[in-house]
Structure formats: C-alpha cells, structure tokens
Length: 148
Image (cartoon, rainbow, N blue to C red; front, side, top):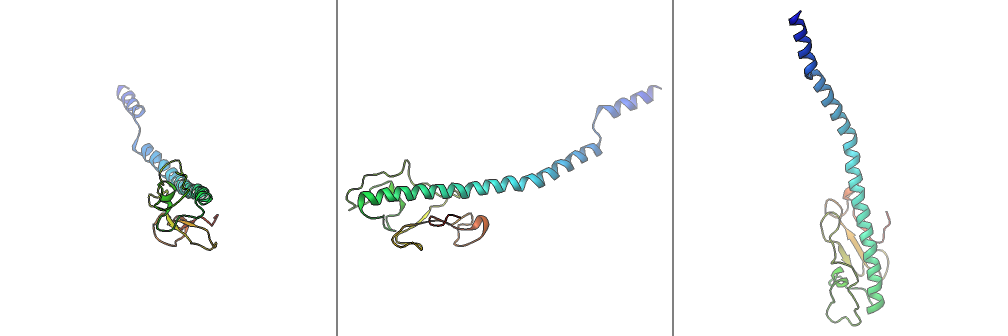
C-alpha cells in the first residue's frame, strides 16, 4: 500500500516527458504561424516610414524652391535642406527639423534633380531592403513620385 501511494505521488509531482513534448510542439506551431505575420508587419512599417519620410522631404523641397527659386542640384542633394549650400541666395533653412535621416534600412536616400518621370521635379529613391536597384516585395525600390 505504501509503495502504491509513493508511486502516485511521484507521478503527480512532475511533468512527464510526453507532456513537455506536447507543450513544445504547440509552442512551435504557434511560432510558425504567428512569426511570419509579425515580421511582415515590421516590413510594412518600414515601407510606410520610408514613404512618410519622402513626403516630408518633398514638402521641404517645395519650401526650399519657394525661397531660392530652384530645387537643390543632384550634387547638393538632400543635405541642402539642412545645411546652406554655397552660392544659394535667399536660403532660409534649415527646412527639416533634424539632419537628413537614412532610409528605414539604414542607407542614404538617393536624390536626383532633375530626375524621374515628372519633368522639372526632384526624385527621391530608397533602394529597399536589399540596397540594390529594382527588386520585388521588401526589396522593391521606393520612389517619391510613386504612391505604391
């Protein structure tokens, strides 16, 4: 009788290996289903952040042009929104609240003027997650003149 009680108590005290394997399997399945969705949301957030930054740059470039009569050259780049370029009269900047940030993937934006398909308008480009021209999905380039 004593041996029987001891065996029952031992069984009740701990978790069996099978129970642990079942729990780990459930956790693994949840991670496999939920994990990609969480990473996808992070990626979409970076794309949205890039588009928002480009929109702010375009607003600042419009103010720059209103003051100086022209957009910054490709050589002057977006830095002209923060630091007065040489030989630019009527510069009333800085036109941004902080220095020009990198894109959401940590690389500098590409600025061109003239550039893109819109005549006499600047073009701002982020090369996406891969940092290379072209690409699809997360690697797709973001353009200031392209809404999606």
